Amino acid sequence: MDKNYELLCRKAVMHGPLESLFCCVGDPVVGNPTQLMMEATFQSMLFPARYLTCTVSKDNLASAIEGIKALGFTGANVTAPHKVEVIQYLDGLTDSARLSGAVNCIIKDESGKYIGDNTDGKGFHTSIDNITPVEGMNVLVIGAGGAARAIITELALHGASKITIANRTTQKARQIIDSLGPQVKSTLKSIPFDGTLTIGAEYDLIVQATSVGLFDPAGGFEITWEPKTSGVRIAADVVFNPVDTNFLKGARNAGATVVDGLGMLVYQGAIAVQEWTGKDADCEIMRKALEEAFTI
Ligand code: NDP
Image (cartoon, rainbow, N blue to C red; front, side, top):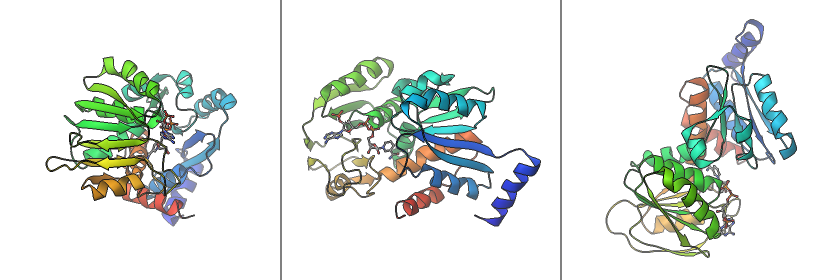
């Protein structure tokens, strides 16, 4: 640990204000690199804080959230399988969390209330917005799980004109359309998906939002990319390990600008840090911490 940072943390214990407390709750959480990413950024910001990774079973979720409140934690991350269940124990939700129906980040506000947010979708949006605005885009999203829903919500909130969902279980895509569709201006529709897909030139942004390929470098779908000669074609994967997935390799060969899942992971974390501390995190330091974490 950096000597200056260590001294700052010691001074916080002896003279206050005490270090801010954060945690990540999920089950399982072993292998979740968030703590390492957060500790790296807190240190670089000289922000005295402690971040813990906690295994919390479904049965203990209510008490864990009560504990977070009682102990005065400044914030927390929530991961699978609690992103939906946690909502009932919180004091309020941001629009992103309400519309996506899931919380991955808890923020203690100025009045001491614990508010649920969804920074997954916001982080994804930032990773695309860094290249070009999503307003007016025609988007294809493969997948209809929690990550897909958060992404679709945020793309709709930022003015994507059409969003097509291709999911193995069509019913799940329909559920997103039925619940989110009436609340946003984007046109949402679903197409059948059996693992094989031809991606037409009409799409500006194609998002691989399933868990296929995670920890499986050989994993992926059978995708044919129709040529696209004009306009933007961005392909993004939510899978962050491996970083360069088969989906992204195929997209790159088809001339797309590719965006890996590590970007989304970094930005969702950086947005959480901003909301918790009011300060900007260094995304490069966070990305480096993640890359190092994956080699441990
Ligand atoms: P969910 O379990 O909620 O959803 C899984 C999705 O993958 C569903 O659409 C599911 O389809 C689909 N799927 C799974 N296996 C197959 C298969 N063999 N063939 C076709 N479709 C399949 O998971 P999440 O949405 O929470 O997470 C999805 C991925 O996103 C994970 O890899 C996760 O690590 C990653 N993620 C990345 C983040 C980042 O910051 N980069 C943040 C959050 C998540 P069906 O509905 O038919 O079951």
